[in-house]
Image (cartoon, rainbow, N blue to C red):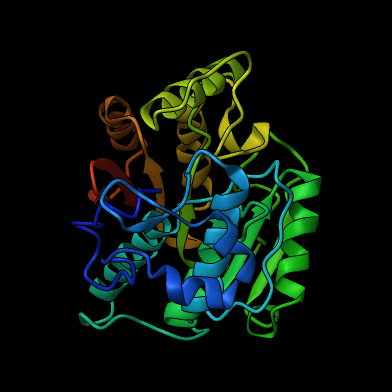
Length: 302
């Protein structure tokens, strides 16, 4: 999440977060946020993005102000997502679905989306329901995240009838145990664990805090939080997506598009090669830019 002094550039044209955060409006929605608002060197309102509590409150205010939420609470240990980037993924998926709908973005519950790893924050269904009225199924392997996600859905009436959450009992599986025998999805979305170990997570945290001008002594506190299954898995992003691609072939008649975020550009070529060997009929790479950060959506269909 960017400092308020940096205008979000190159976001998707329908992304609500093109401009600086309006802290005057946000603190009206979540009054607790005001205690964390401070002036940056340019005299503009911001927060200290190294403080997890401040980041959580900012996200809560954004979700309540812009995405119809009336309740959003989650444990401090879970992943707290930067909303502008998450919204971009949903908007680019909408464009992808529009291609098969005469150029018009399909809306409403006739569009069914599978969110692999919905997480405690429920972020993609929150945005997708608010923006396009889609129906979501979300999978989750972590028991605490599953409980928190269900609590958020149950306490927001507009989500309760649009979002179903399913437990993934086997950490080695991705689509198996989640997609029903005769179930069909328009698109599958995924934000895979990026890191390959907890040590790698802590090293990244240290670097982020240094970039924010913070002195790091001892074990760093993650401003982006996250449980192990949210942040890392054995083999990291490449291994997770490789497994996802293998499983997608078994479910090729039950989804139009399979997609995933790919953070490390070096993973693209081997994943594209695997998709070619898997006989994917079409493979796309959609680039997303948020400020100085570049990420990609890898999309394929059979």
